[in-house]
Length: 550
Image 1 (cartoon, helix red, strand yellow):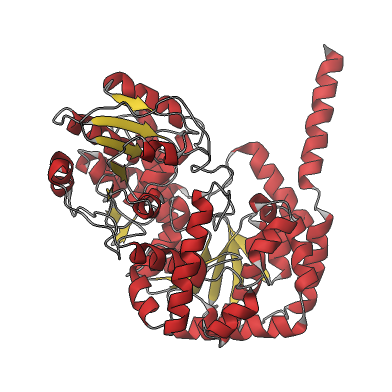
Image 2 (cartoon, rainbow, N blue to C red):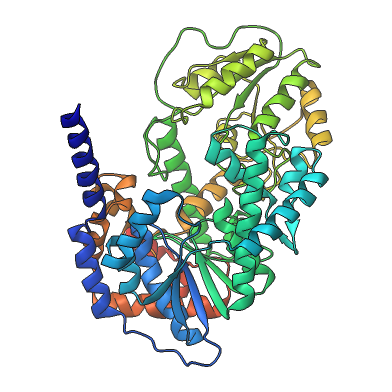
């Protein structure tokens, strides 16, 4: 027994040391940054600050390095990294302290691009007391889950962030307001808000970069917005300036039609043809077409025995979402979460004479299927289709209408001639009419109950325009020469979150490229635009540029 205990202690110690050891690629990247970014020494008065979230998103560190230094130069400010949450538990605290002491790995990388210190949002006793009082007041005002997503504190909307963080943290499909677990989560979230708000009040923050516009990670974002502080969300492929009117990155789909109209006619014509070609590749079962993270195709040639029961009734397909993965990714939907949406459909089904089917994505997250199987126990008239069912077979066997909140099936089924009804006015297809977009739950129910009278035509040209603007026009090559080829070279999408991406970046690096990126970032920062694109590099989306990239 003593030998086993000694072995376990040795193994734990070894794993801890291994975890703390800085990868060789990280060390090389640290040296690269140190030689590249000259340390900025801001003026002492007012102590202006730009904040950058501390994380281990390796590829994003490349973007952070540049954006942080351009913002620091603009505002004559010091760069401060911050942990989005306080360390939890003795082990995590010990690891964090050792990493700081050793200037280890990702902490060393932040310091290599001139992060002067690291802030951790720990609450003091006064802040905890204030949070407890505020929590009790808010709990007393909650009567349903819709009230949770509408929580506002001191003018900052954070209910959606609290909501999605709860679902993700505890792998739950919805919220029970009366549960002790939720009450404790609410208190922690409000405590975090109070710490952040007081930090912003006490410091001269000029800009902040966050990793996500969702979850409690975005609490500093919402506070900064109310204080008219510049907020950015940077990755290796995207850079957004988030504003009061655009609280969520990736919501530029609202502007696709007007942007498309400004393009030269030749580019428009090419874009529509190229979009159709890529959609056809998806429908041929090719994996990862403009979705490098995808592992399986929902349009494979996989065949099952009869999936859709022959009948004269309308046949409805529900394309489910992951219950735990940020329902509010684009903002509010008709329902606070995907679970309530599904149960609304269950209740609505009792009023119809339709055949109802449910299908998960082939890449569904663990726990999703169990929730749906429990749902079917309550609504046995619903039939669960195999997750690897091909949509080609489903459509061929007679599906009449597809339902989603905001999924890609919106353009995919439309392209195959099947009407799709969304359950959100913040879905990526909202600027076009190839889907049906009910404006309220009452309108949604009315649409569902009257499918026999549905008179809806689909303009496929709009689908191709949407696809072009979303997947082709918006370049992923802000920092890398060719993002798609880079992803292939490092073993797939998840390779970019490993230290090897640093070496890949260094191989591409030239002084000319460095200068170009710096100038483009300065242009973007000064423009105040929502999304950085080719125009900030002084380029235009022309046929010449298209042909040069092929």
